[in-house]
Length: 136
Image (cartoon, rainbow, N blue to C red; front, side, top):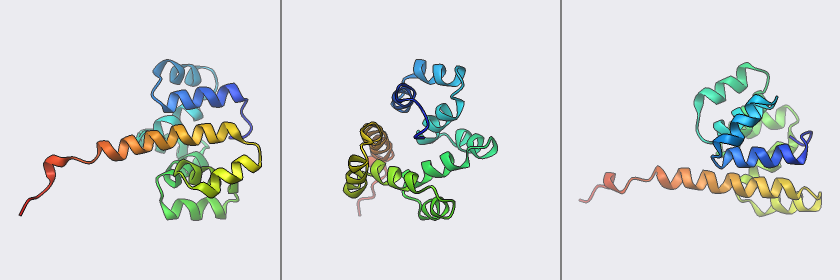
C-alpha cells in the first residue's frame, strides 16, 4: 500500500468510510483493488474472493488480520508482509503499531488506521442485538 500516492490513499479512506462516489472513482480509475479492499473491510465476501482471485491475496488477508484472525497474521508473516502486520495492528487500535508508524513518519497510515478502526467498531456494535439476550 505504500506505493500509492497520498491522494489515492486518502480516497481509499473515504471509500472505507462509505463514500460511494469516491469508491466508484477508485474502481473506474485503475484502483479497483483498493475499491475492493474498502468493501472487504466493510464485510463484503464477494470483494474478499475477488481480491484472492485477481492477484491481491495480501489485501484479502490484510482485511482478515484487521479483524484479528491469527491465521491471517501467520500468512502475512510467512509471505514477508511485515508492514501489513503493523498496519493491521494499528487498525485494531494497538498503541505499539501507532508508535511504529509515527517513528517511520507514516502519518497517513495512522489516519487510515483510525478510519478503519472506527468502521470496524461500528460493525461490531451493529452486530450486537439486544433483542436476542436471554433473561432466565
